[in-house]
Amino acid sequence: MKLLKKLIILGVIALIVIAVLSVIPIGIKGYEMYREATEAIAIRDRIDQLKGDESYVTIDQISPYFLEGVIDAEDRRFYEHNGINLISTTRAMLKNIVAGTTLEGGSSITQQLAKNMYFTFEKLYERKVAELLVAFELEKAFTKTEILEYYCNISYFGEGQYGIKEASIHYYGVEPIALTEPQAMSLVRTLKSPNYYNPNTLP
Image 1 (cartoon, rainbow, N blue to C red):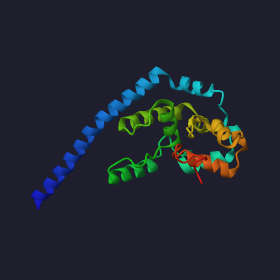
Image 2: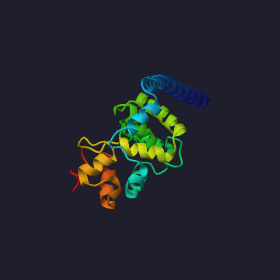
Image 3: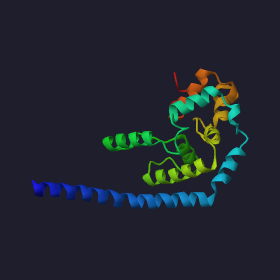
Image 4: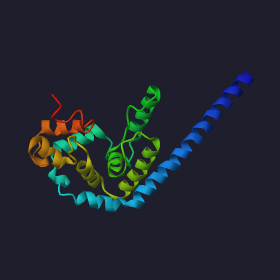
């Protein structure tokens, strides 16, 4: 029995060591990806680019239905966390491990903003690390209201439409503030899979 216990302990230690050794290279690559992205264009400069777009709208020009719907659907703890929703991320990781593939991302609104600002949509762990580092920087530099505003203006809504203003006019012919509740909820659903569930494909 003592030998068996020792073997189990050694096995657990070996697994921890392997896990740590496999995570370190991912962390290093992720940090390098983050550094390269933010050195090419600083976070505040990237935000200034976004705000300079002619289709940019401030948060008071967006339907409250849409804003409430986005938080409810994408990140219910948006106002409580510091860039990462640990509960959603942990749940997504467990589901992915069980499935043996990436089914869910568990990303917060801030993480999604970071990804849209700098990175591709490749499902790479190092990209996730880089995304988290940018998200933490965003949370330090901007208010939650500003982050939500930026997210609404950079998100993709399918059919070549980026940002809530382009999407509102393209799909419904109205400014974002004039979206009805059903229209706003349709655009919120679009964020999950813009090419397949935009208002022109939804029943």
